[in-house]
View 1 (cartoon, rainbow, N blue to C red):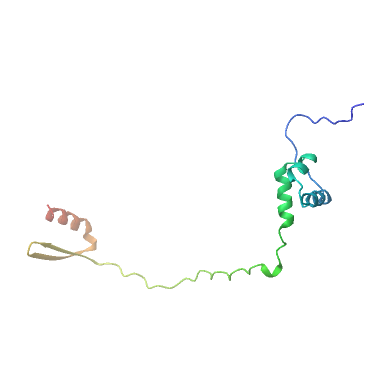
View 2: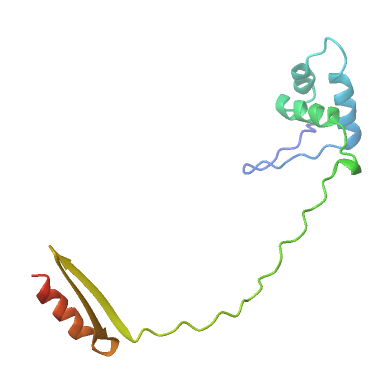
Length: 123
């Protein structure tokens, strides 16, 4: 009688290993002169995964004192009351050509006329 189980073709599932199984393999890898790749192969595991288990087991647990406190929260937005900007009532233009200097003050309400005048002067 055949006792092997055939899995349907398709996506492979991630295997889950018990903590006892992992601890046993980690202890075996920590023995002097033992190849972790050979232990992984003998147990049907990927050598990189077993190496990761060993590295995680060898790292010390972080102590509660080594945890850095969070910095204080940044202050919230504080709106400032600024004075309302004073509307410009005049357009001020200063022209200098050669030794001649001209200063012109034009009302903002006639800005289009001012632009026409400036174009004519600069020709």
